Length: 298
Image 1 (cartoon, helix red, strand yellow):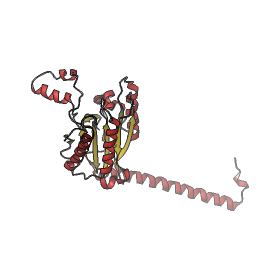
Image 2 (cartoon, rainbow, N blue to C red):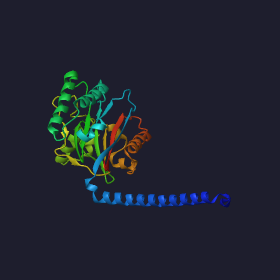
Image 3 (cartoon, rainbow, N blue to C red):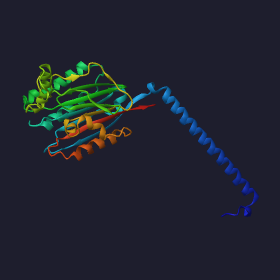
Image 4 (cartoon, rainbow, N blue to C red):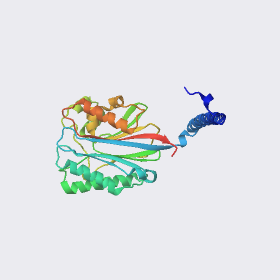
């Protein structure tokens, strides 16, 4: 211990003043910090709907049991989100056909070349995708193809475009919803069986069930698209993925792999780990772009 009685009187006085000033400064700092926290919380609650939604984005791109990585992804430049919105896309080369990886890469490269897109021009954007498909057809004449899922997020709204059987999934309030229907034979057969009063279980037993009825590489393909934008809310999670993800993690179990306080990187890591731990001996390539919507003052 120090014996301050041995210090000169003026030094003791100086130390005393310094301690008092430090105590005052500390109390002032605490008061300001508490006031700022209370004010920020109150402002956030009062103006919650006026705060901007921002996109927290992550992705994974993994090869399964296939010899080649036939998935390709595209994420538009983050620095241009404010003026042109976010584009996130995944293209999956069709198994059983040649050059799947070449076609999927061509698709995402073409999307990049056409960026930026007008948000309210759904028909024009769908026509652009159809033109890409026609160019693939002219090159391969149904000998190669790919799927495509793409979302366009601008401010608090989202449009989507889809060809084939890849996934656009919205997770909201602990529930996962597939936004795009799969353009394969099973969807067509279920519809016909249901209309005819036939048990739809038989559709799943058909060997043609997973065969695609439309895809990139088909002539004059029918691009699925939103008729009007979907309103997004805080904590929405959007997953744009190849079907290798949902082949191993069914849609109704996807939320079991997610902690909703995680950021996009944590969610992407959890889903990727979930697919890996399934140890599917026929695991397809699996890729996804994960987007979490957060509120921000910026």
